[in-house]
Length: 603
Image 1 (cartoon, rainbow, N blue to C red):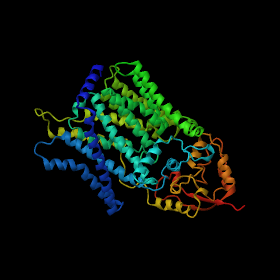
Image 2: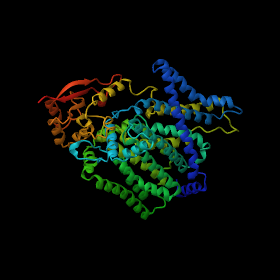
Image 3: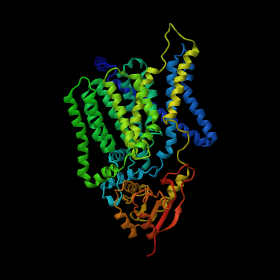
């Protein structure tokens, strides 16, 4: 795209057709699509509550979803006065499919979202612990020997607590997860606005003859991308990923807004993203470098003074956020969020494997670029595409520190925005009145487009089985853990994963397994504190998982130097009973395994 063409698009945007005011209808329709998804999820819950979750319930759920997906055809048949526009009807069916899949996703995730214990992943207990410490005025980052701190900055935890408190649920773990779902909803809405702007910058804005229908399709697709099982599996759990994803997508949308309108407000909002992002999750600070790279290399016309100012402001925001955290928490902050995280070695082979695991998202973004870009010259839109590609490649490299690929979540989300924008160009257009092909030759392109959407959705991790993700036995497991705290001083009971049992009393628990595991895996841990508490029999009761297994979190077999915690526990505590592992799941994560209940040995 030439600079003159981009100037024309900017002029048209300012004329009013694509102004900020025109974005509100897209936003409203997107909210309506998400509401429909919630209603589909509730309908599935009602059906399976009546018929059960067995074969009969699944069959009735299938009929319900079929009715939702076929509703555009039924409406067209009832209201038919002229010949049906198969292009529009096909897009309506695709929107209905996306809404149905989003409803299934919400239904399947509901058993996790409303589970009252924070033990669905390693970060949940640490996330809730930060909220509990903030409520009572306790330092969020404390001494390394206490093992009661988190490895991420606390922005997401504090904002989540603030929203839950305003809603009247300041100590509710399910409420905290509902807020994460709200972040995913907001991400989908912002992604819809970014997609519309990307279509306009690509020169295909006139093909959006029904913006409301495209928004009805895009928004649930983006929600599915924000919660996909491959690269965004934690966004509706208690982890920093949900808000970090929202900030990254917002940052990309603001870049597109600035490209189209040269709005100073968009530019100022962009410059706030890196600093705010650092407070939510350290990796989001990368937007300082991405913005600087764009302004130095791709902005038209070139303005080195503006590029320098943008670079200074973006990196300065990150520095200011860091300085504030250092002033509040000092060395303890540096240890937990920099030293421990910085000692994770990157395995290049693992990084490459993650690229292969997430190849569908690379393909989606590349195909979207091929559809919307002209590669015969350097252009601002090409710069925006390279910003996405560079972002995803950096995420791929840094993901080599762990086996999970949630590091690729924001970049994969932006890839879906490019693919969704390209759909406008590739979607079968309505046939001209003077040259109408046969009916079957009009059905085939639309049917193929819908089939391709279904196949791509499965490969991208959008599909969920309409069944509860957690078995009923988790309730027995949770209540058994809670009974171990009855009649006990919570300060004298140690639980490896989970802090929901400490939250009502305002107790700050120590010696978390997740914190110890991070310190041990990076060989940065100081075990003197926990070993002294064990040797002094400070705890009247200790509940740990995997106590007899090689991958015991407090003394993992792959550590270069053992911590000595298992030996100290065996010398000073005896195993009096066990809480059996959760039944009805496949491969059990550590936080659902058998709990060993240890009590002090008689001196």
